[in-house]
Length: 286
Ligand SMILES: CC(C)(COP(=O)(O)OP(=O)(O)OC[C@H]1O[C@@H](n2cnc3c(N)ncnc32)[C@H](O)[C@@H]1OP(=O)(O)O)[C@@H](O)C(=O)NCCC(=O)NCCS
Image (cartoon, rainbow, N blue to C red; front, side, top):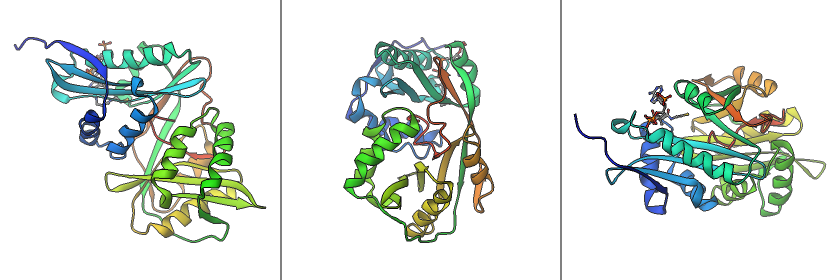
């Protein structure tokens, strides 16, 4: 038997982005592109970790801190270096980063096989985090248009209210990076909803997607589809948002895939479960 290599956990740097994205690709996490890892690094480099075993890169995990809540995601260890304790060490580093920030709740989307591990770390299940994908019919709507830079501050303020914490960094970055994938709806001259997406792995990952009036939710997605014909969309939604889950389950063209569990460590698991939120931003960011 070969000896167990020495393990170190260090902060991620830009030179690790391709390595991390390759691990995600190999897991089939198609929307976790190099740009997604670049966003985590820009947000908080001290919350992004790489494991090395015997001097070789072997795993990744990231922590994202908002005001009172944080997320842990992108926990992946190279297949041939699993079961050696690297996953646990990476996870504990990310947890330590968020604990040091004094956050009230730490959340994650846990794959089924990893749930017992997270439960042992003090997390509990809140609800299923559903996944849908498919092609949908596009249709243009008069009250929907591309997001303008002036929309960003009202959008971020509204998102804080609906989501329950400040994820403005990621919203601003997403809108700046993918302006043709960022739409808003208006009612009476006021912002009434928005939808954003990002490319990754040959499909478009939708989210966040918010509609103050339920009647705006469908048109936002249809309008986006009308501008991106032939694309496959991927959407994640919390089952706690019952109306959104119902809507996606009955939408022609969407198929439901394997779900994960939204889990929390802390008193409140309500983050992101407002009924106006039709899609999560991403599994690792809420
Ligand atoms: C989950 C993962 C990161 C664990 O990494 P690892 O380095 O093998 O994990 P460790 O050796 O530190 O073990 C951590 C715990 O997870 C358990 N575990 C590890 N691999 C497991 C597997 N394939 N299935 C179920 N449990 C597993 C171990 O039993 C251990 O728990 P214990 O200490 O109570 O026995 C790794 O299997 C992986 O990259 N999986 C694919 C990506 C993934 O599913 N990530 C998690 C998404 S939420």
